Image (tube, rainbow, N blue to C red; front, side, top):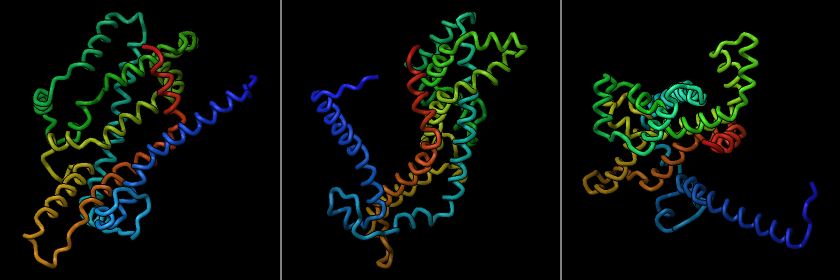
Length: 293
């Protein structure tokens, strides 16, 4: 491949690099401010609109959050719900998307239309609550997983990926004596790692960040995931800061603003640690799975 080395091409490449670098910097700076603010003092947060390096490093926010004995338990709940929920999501998504990717499936178009219909219209909060209650899932971890077992958008993406696979691969496997389940497990899934990694990350982030479902369906505070506990701490810090006059003079005021930023950091860091391990599959899966419907 011959590269264009003309003056116009070099100018375009330079401007393109500068523009993309500036855009990347704009996306990173807010997160750097959040990290710096979580370690900064309340005085610096109140007097400076933006900074990326705190003048005085303070761990008061993290001490306040991690001082609660409910944090380890709620973190384990969030990890368990995220891992098991993502497995359930991928299992049902794959087992539904694979048959729908076959044009010879009877009633295929009708089922796909119903899936697309759910992308536009939903039952709403109250009907969903009644369904969860009727199934006996209230105050159970299953209420955080089963109602969202399949995402219609992710289902369409995985179906589109399966449709792009050559039929000859499956036909040759069947000729060699492989069953339909064997074809899915031994042929289709190994070749689908890019789209499964992308969809799995979408599901995992959704489970990890979810707190509203836990507030509605889980009545026992011992079963609350990490996001709910962190939300309660932010609300408590806001209430305490707004009612300082009712406390004793020896009471130490919690750093309200830095607590909010520390909560954001603690919520995002686990996903940031996971993403580098699946980045290669994630990027490829998003590009391939969304090409055709």
